[in-house]
Length: 328
Ligand code: A3P
Image (cartoon, rainbow, N blue to C red; front, side, top):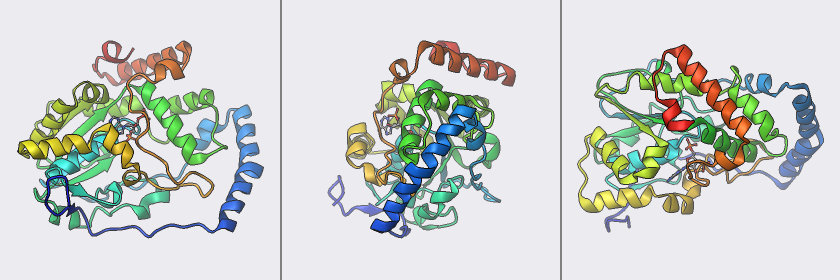
């Protein structure tokens, strides 16, 4: 039974094959990690080659010729900016607080997913999320800047932005769990994050692309920090933007299921699974959920470096987002 006492609502007909690894495969992967990849990584770190290597990661796919429709709610956030949180709010709103899935990626397409996990994500052309949604709305995830996301007046876009210093720390924890021991030090990670070759693209370019669209009626622009300060308001803004009028108990169910405590307890429904054969299988997209973790995790010099780097990029882009006021 769902939280509202009715049979739970499934959200799609997609499921990914269960991935298992033999004991021998796991031992071999661990040997590869410790015996080959760690020494290569340390040498690369010494030679300053990590940023270039990260820039050479396989490129994700894109939306192809897909033209979004009035049924689509596209959550557009930079990586580690609260994407999964907003996806959960949006899918619960679409299902009136009663969306059930084994994994959120079985119900929400992500056209630009990394190639290694693409097969575990529902394709964009699977019609079941729309068909199984009581509001007829389906949610789509993307980390791409606006220029790489097809724009349609009928579709709704929710843009999410977070302090890049907290993005940097969140990304460090996530990717070091994903890549295991070969992952470089935090000092090198800061260089990777600021490098023009960074595989996720530039934080400032992403922000500027959505900031310039924030007054369009089909665009809702949110920051992680505002959502943390007033989550109820964020739920109201998103449901209004999606055109879904929630009854009180439905709204409560959306709030409960998108709370940090609930998502942490149900973390396996959000986790993307093992990416590297030697890496962790319980890669969690729900970690500490705090604003300002970079204050203790980064040195004052690293924080200033990130702030001045992105303020300069925003200036070059002619973007008037109030960075100094909000994040420095
Ligand atoms: P931290 O690593 O700082 O804890 P994304 O989904 O874009 O990868 O973002 C992940 C970040 O969102 C993580 O930040 C994660 O903890 C945070 N997050 C996930 N669910 C959340 C929730 N319900 N409330 C607040 N933060 C949440």
